[in-house]
Length: 391
Image (tube, rainbow, N blue to C red; front, side, top):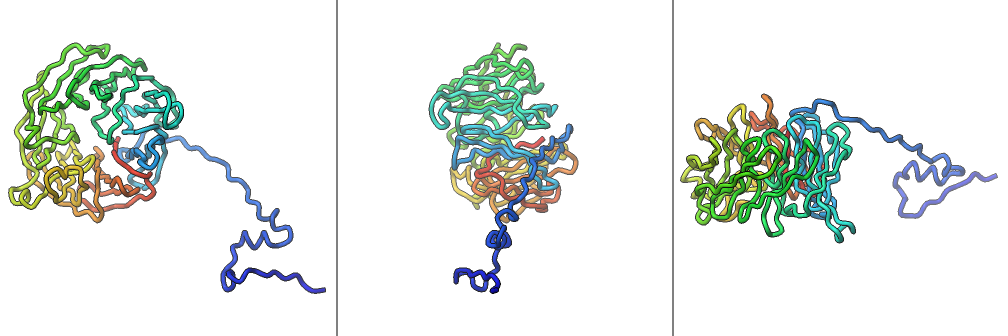
């Protein structure tokens, strides 16, 4: 009796045959090659999150109906979880107690068309399961993601959401009562910058701001236009500010820091100062990106993405990160980047990490915020990462 022989197409000559394919070619191989299904395993997050966790928000330009938010551990480089967050997604908001994750979201009844519904979805911070939806007016601004599109009042009670239809207003949601409260009209003024437990301001097109006070029910009881904060014609500011107590720090297109202070219920501009020397400004150094400022409050260090560019290059990615001492307003460090970044964020602990992303590259870069040393690069981070949110 002749032994059984197997013949293979010529294109496989001299090549290793995959073990599964070989098993399938043998008598009875199909049954033997069946793989046992792996059981799905679910693991809740710890009750107390790490200061080195970061949310990477993804508007998913490839298919904008399916926004995402990814949670990463900066120390291990591991992805801890993911949220599906709907159309034209901006970013999640994390209250101080860390009990829930709040996410303003938009959905259409036919996926990409049909009846529009806007909601604030609340997710359990440990399981990341959606626990509640608060329906809000279908007016949420669908713009490039900005941190100031959504913000919490200082006591974490009211969630403020910027609307643009193109009429401008702010939706107020009571997170304690889990309900929509109402709207505040902000004609000619955009975005939200909290200044206390019952107050915020919006930036206006003429270089002023509209300061708003709320009552304990979340309804507007007073609005006031501030004096001019910056020259909107000669050197406007970007909306990408960071908060330092009673002061919001804005950067102008040319590279000036414009402090906007709220003291005694009055909002006004403080003394401007420059991120660059006169020579550096001539060379074209200026801030730019989607989220180009980060502040470590405890050390009083301000981080700014910087690039060389012309007028109106304020959206260009940074090739370096410049670090400043806020007390002296002097630069203390220049961090050279191997790849450009469009957004940065720093953790608030005493051993801070500095995170960075580039909207056109699905990776998260992690640095030691004190030394600027690159620690790790985490790959496969969504499709078009935009805004970073730290704990």
